[in-house]
Length: 150
Image (cartoon, rainbow, N blue to C red; front, side, top):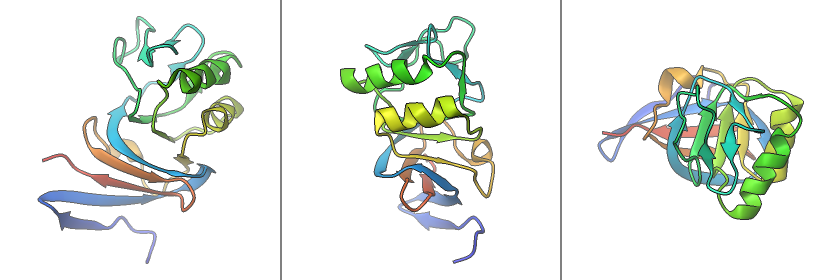
C-alpha cells in the first residue's frame, strides 16, 4: 500500500485511511469529537466527568469520555498529564487521541492514560475527520481509519 489516502465505499459510508506515527499503542474505535483548538488540562477539563470546562473553548460543555479526541494538542502547564491521568482513573478519558502537534505534555498525557494515540499524519486530519464520524485508531500501526457518517 502507498501512503496515499484510500477511499472506498463501505456500508454506505466513505472510509478514509490516514497514516501517521505511533505515540501510544493499542486500538480503539469510537465516535470522533473534533476541535481545532488546543485543550488546557489544568482548569480546562473536569477529569471526573470528561467535560471541557474552559469557558472560551469551542467545545465548552462537551464530554470527550469514550470518544476519539481529535485536536491540535495540549496547552498550559505540566499538570495536563495529571488531569488526563485522573480522567483515566475516573473512567472518563477519551478512547483514543489523534493530534497534530507533539509536545512533552501531550505525550505524557497519552502515556498516563494508556490511550491509543497517533500523530504526524500524511494528511491533515482536520480536513477529513468531523465530529460524529466513526474513527478507529490503531496506535501500533500508526493508522487512523475514518468512516464518514452518512
